[in-house]
Every structure is written in structure tokens, then in C-alpha cells.
Length: 360
Image (tube, rainbow, N blue to C red; front, side, top):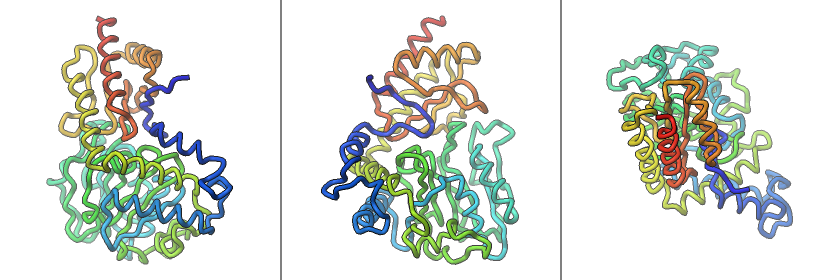
């Protein structure tokens, strides 16, 4: 069967060349006589894979000295708990910007462990925009500020990062990590689930400034304790070895494209194709406010639920799948992560044009 264009929000599309390399090495990794899935995580074979994975990720992200990179289990949602448990150093206070579903869930989880101040929110407007960070008054006694850089469900992103002064900025980058350049030095902590721009689900990368380690709440479980994980190379327990290997293949693929700057240009081109069509369509319209539109998740509707459902089926019949929008937004969502080629965006526009002619 011919491969389709998969617009899933996550687990998301993985480049075919990555899948083919994993297939070729599945039974026997290089000259090691076994699959990566069979390797001991303490063996020199896997230690080399882990070291290479960390090194190429640091290169792609431009991670400066003074930061630790960990590949952990549990996805980004587990870090909703790990962030406050690691960073509340006595005061137990943090500022959260509520800009989307996962930002909201992160704040709700943090409330279990201390005091959370919602400094700004777009919840009442169904998260169609990101609050203006230049107008936010940050708490002087907060241990950290938390944001979600891209909102998968609602199709919005931060165009400008907040200036939090000496207060560490913590960012959930699950749905746009490695899709555009970021200055890592502006963050205290970055974390991201793997299943959108890195690889298969079940893995989470954490980038933490070294001076922020060692502040964990005494009740912090050792699997969530970044300092414990850092001292053990992320192997307090058996890590997701195959997930780490797949991430390595993904990072190497991205480096081969020219790295983050190169894929950023592709991502802007894909998004422009879709948004330009939506802005001129008589049937479809985008749901996110224009100045806050995501480069990764394009959300749109027809205004008629029956037409939305008909389009999703029509698109699937033409090889474009997983376009149904999240229930909180409805309509459609085209997730155009790094692995989605420009050709996929072009075909989606062509199919939308054809459907629009049918409806009119």
C-alpha cells in the first residue's frame, strides 16, 4: 500500500527514510549481532548510541555549556509534576501562562504541590490567541515561569518569548521543538514529548540549566528527580532504549536537511501555503487569530459540522489522513511537523480547493 500524508497531531508522521533505516537495523544493529531492543542499557553498545543522541541533539538545538540533556520516560505530561517538584526551592510559588489545553493541565498539576499564579489566560476566548507577554506582570517571588511555546489543539504559538528577568523560564516545547530556532540560554528548562518532532511516543527530552538541579522537594520521586537522573545519565531505571535510538535517527535526518534553520524555512513555507488558502477561501476559515498562528498545527473549519465531516472523509479518500480536529475546536487540524513534506501541504490545498468546488 502506498504511504499516505499523515497529518496526525501525535503520534505524528516520521520521515520514511528514518523508518527504512530502523527497519534495516531492526534485527541486527550494524555489526553488533542483535537488535537495539535487545541491548543492555549498560552495555558499551548502547552507551555509544546514547552519547551520540545527546551530542547531535545539543548540536541541533545549540545547547550551550552549563545545561544537561536527559532522555526520560513518561512523556511531557509526567514533567507537569516533575517541574514543580524539582524547581520549588522553599517558596513554592510559580507563574503560569494559560494559553492552551496542555498549558492549563500543567498549571493544574503544579497546584498539587504549591502556589500557582495564572498571570495571563486566553481560556475564556477558547485559546484563539496567546496572551501578550509584554503586558504581563511577573511575580517577584516566583521560583519559575512556565509557558507552552506551541498549542497543539488550538493552533497557536508564541511569537515573542517573555522576559522574566532572573526568574527561570520553563517551556513545554512538545509540539514545536526543533521546528524553529530558539536561544536555549533564555530558558532555565525546556522539555518536550517525542511524538511530534522527535520520534515515537514514550520518550521525553529535558534540557535543564545545571544550577537548577539539586533543588528538588524531598518528596520528589527519584524517577522525576532531574539531579538523580543527571548523575545516572538518565538511567535511574532502564530507559526507553529503542525510543532513544529512534530519536538519534530523527536527529541525524534533521541534521542532513541542514538542521533547524533549514527546516524552519520549510515549515514557514508549508504554513504559508495553508494559511494563504484559508484567508482567501469561501468555505474554509482558520480558527486561530492571525498574529498567533502556529507553524505546526493549522486549525480550520467550514462552519458546518456535516461539511467538516464530509471533508475529512473526502481528504482520506485522497490519501490525506488524521485531519479531524480536536473536540475542543472541532473542524479540522493539519499538523505539519518537520516530517511533513511541502508536497503534503500542497496536496492538502489542492484537495480543499476541489472540495470547495463540490460544495459550491
